[in-house]
View (cartoon, rainbow, N blue to C red):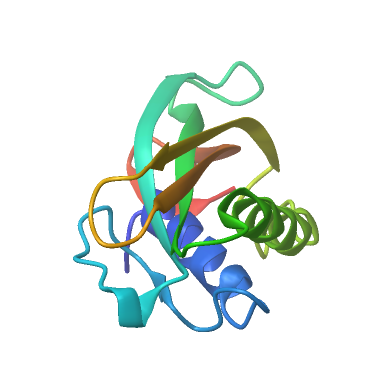
Length: 147
């Protein structure tokens, strides 16, 4: 079995599969070598996690908050920002439809969005970075099981 953090990330990947703009080009990795043939695409990865003693449970509980990044990439000559906004809207709709991530989380919400554009290379490239803050709980001895 995998850590709940991994289960959360994998659930977000599943929710983002089959979106209109990015299709099934959703990669569960921060490191991926995108080519023009794989764009537009999404990369999903955990950025950081904070834990503290869970005051609602005994001393063996942890309240955790993980930031999961969903990055949308596109490369094109026209409507670059429009495509990034469309990617964002599709991801937001998909993830918001399951805020408990199939029972793995207590809550999931979009906490930040950043957009970057570059004109270097053959075609202009844009990236939209969406930070999803996910709250969940585990026992200190059971990091693979949410409660």
